Length: 403
Image (cartoon, rainbow, N blue to C red):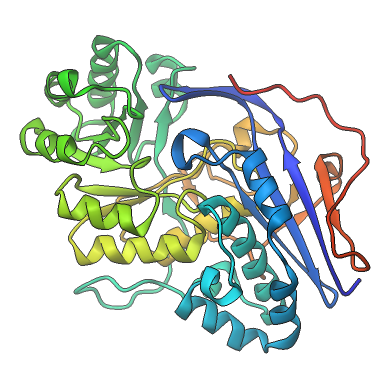
C-alpha cells in the first residue's frame, strides 16, 4: 500500500473513573490516526476536551474529513525525510503542510507525521523533537535514565488511600472539590505526610469565582499548598493578575493556555507563575516546545502535563517532550496502566510505580504500534485507490460515555 490513512475513535472504558471539577471521566475519547506512505506507517493521537479547547472528538473527526491530505502525502513522498523534518521543526507543522484547524487536529496529524519520519530515519522520539532544549546558564548534560513524575489525588479516591498507596511522592496535585474545607483538609494531610520539600498544588479547574478566589487561596496557603492551578474561569486575565498579587500562592495556568496568543497575554497580564504544557491541548509536541521556550524567556516555570485517558502515541510524545525539557517543574505520566488493563498499542507505556519515575520512550518514532485491540475502534479509512474517506464496517465495542 503506497498511501493510505486509517482513523480510530477510541472510547475505551476505564478500569477506574477519574473525577475533577470540570469533568467526570469513565472512558477515553481519543482519535488515533495511522498514515501509511511508501510502505512505512506512523501513528498519531489527539484527545480533545470541549472544556479546554472547544474541540470534541466529533468536531476533530469532521475537520479531518474536510482536510485534504494530498499535500501531506506529496511531501512525505517527494521530499527527503531529514530535510522535511528540519523544515517542520523550523517553520512549524501547520505552515509546512498548509493545515488549518484546531489544536487537536494539528496534534493528530503532526504526531502521525513525526512518527512516520522517525521510522524512516531511525530516530527516537526525543531526537525527532530536536533533543534537549536550552536551559539558561546550564551546561549540557546527558539525558537521565528516568524522570520523577507527579501523583494526582482526584475525587474518586480518599486522601488516606492516596497517601497509603500512591507514593513515593515527588510532586502532588490535588483535584479541588466543591468544598474548600475538604480541599484544605486534603492539603494538610498531604503536607503532613510528604514534608516540606515536596511541592503541593490544588487544581481548581476553573471552579472558583472572583469573590471566592482570594479566601480560598488563603485557606489553601495556610494549609500548606504551594500552587493553585487554573482557579478562575478561562481567560480571566485581570482577575488572575490581581489574585496572584495577593494570594500568597503561585498560579499555574492550564485551560487558559492553549495558544501562543494566550501565552503572550498571560505574560503581559502577569497572570501566572507557571504554564501547564500538554501536547494535544497545545497543538502538537513542536508547538508545545515553543511555548516552553516562551515560558523560559519570561521567567515562567512549566509542567509537562497529560490529558486524562490518553491511549497511545500521545503518551510517548509527552514523555519525549519531558526528556527534551528536563527543567520542567514536574512531569505527569498519566495513569494508562491503571485505567486500561488492555491497550490498543504495543509495547504499552510503562511507569515505574516503585519509584514513580518514567524512562525515555523507545524508538524509532514514538516507539509503539497499533495491535489487534485497536481494530474494533476503526471508524474511517482513506484507501490508496480512493480520494475520499469511507466508513469502516467493524463491530463496535460497548461505549460507556463519560459523565
